[in-house]
Amino acid sequence: MEFLTLITDTKVSVDKFPEKCPKCGKAIQSSFHIAKETCFNKEKVAQRLDAIFECPDKKCGRLFLAIYKRNDGINDGIEEDFLLARMVIECPERFDECIKKISPKFGDIWNEAFRAEHHGLKDICGAGYRKALEFLIKDYLIYRSPQKETEIKNKKLDKCADELDEALKKRVKRAIWLGNDETHYMRKWEGKDLKDLKALIGSTLDWIKGVHLTSHYENEMPDKK
Ligand SMILES: [Zn+2]
Image 1 (tube, rainbow, N blue to C red):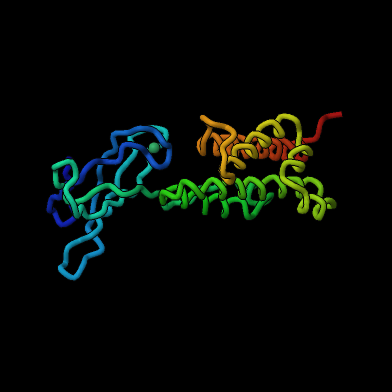
Image 2 (tube, rainbow, N blue to C red):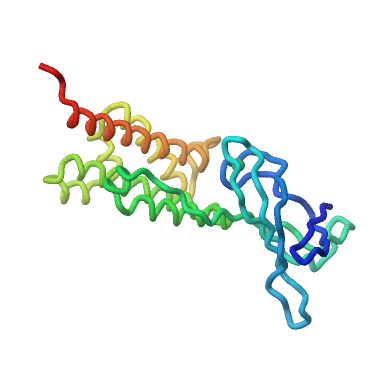
């Protein structure tokens, strides 16, 4: 059992502090900042507690919201006031300007999946990340070859990946395999999960950014003759 001091200066008991950061995914001893009771019933008893915690990891250091629900029963013989229900990072992820330019919808779809993930909807957010990947790859190919727009839009994502440079194709194909695992009944890649899918999409973004940056400077600073 842990105790939290509310903004009203009263103390409440909770079953635990968050043990994993919802942003970086690391196991943490989160530090508590502030909490407030909400969702009062007719008897003026709060049914929910919102608490802000901070990830102690130096690289991450994000604040996040932990939502606790009123404990109506007895948990392991100890009766805490509130039980940890879920953690939320409401702040959407930001993407480079070049990614926004190449694929305007990628970030929106990614952030819908991201919100679903952080609301505990683990079974459906993977399909969202898979959809974000599809927009990114198709938009990237259309950006490179606008004359092939209709053809690319109608082509299966797997076939689109065949048109990518070899190094990019390797990671995109694997992201597609894991993305399919998120949408199908049977998993083909046991031992791989959402974290791997997101890492592969992240690495795809890095590659596209790198190529974009290189061609930007090549245009501004042409090779000397
Ligand atoms: Zn963190």
